[in-house]
Length: 92
Image (cartoon, rainbow, N blue to C red):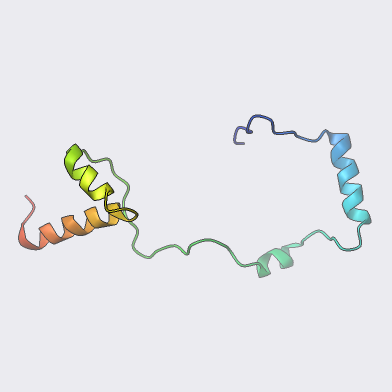
């Protein structure tokens, strides 16, 4: 279980029971069953068919600064520059 953020208040078992009773007494709420959960759509970005590999690479500060100065998507532009280089060079 992940570490809780400072200041997070976890209800006691008694408070949890009180909350559960309040939920059960509310006619507008109900517990979701497995059929309900299956109908729900997953949120977030869909998985890409081709994913990129996370690596660590050492670049010259001036090169890195120039790419970062281009704004959001600079890492994609580094990838594109390397792809372009591969078109004219054979890696050893």
